[in-house]
Image (cartoon, rainbow, N blue to C red; front, side, top):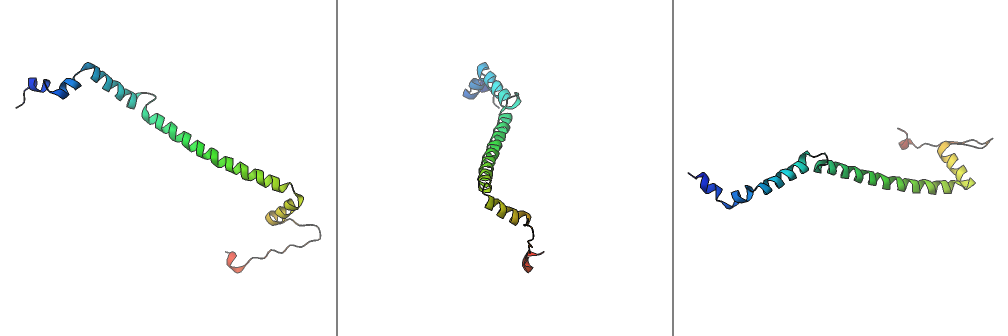
Length: 106
């Protein structure tokens, strides 16, 4: 059987038994898990920041597409073409026929 005095003389016991090492381990454990600004809280915030930056890039691309569309709609002929195609608008005394193919109707 191993005696307590022999265990106290081992290298790992002397190193871990040091009061400064114990204090540092306790401090790091507290900061990593229990503090208000712990690792998990920072990881969650970092993930939120990443998601917001991705949505920021998405909206920048959408704004760019919308600006191009607005510039295109400044031309009256383009605006008329868009209104006719999208909203089925027509001029007076004009008939519009919508042709639907058999495979597109379901």
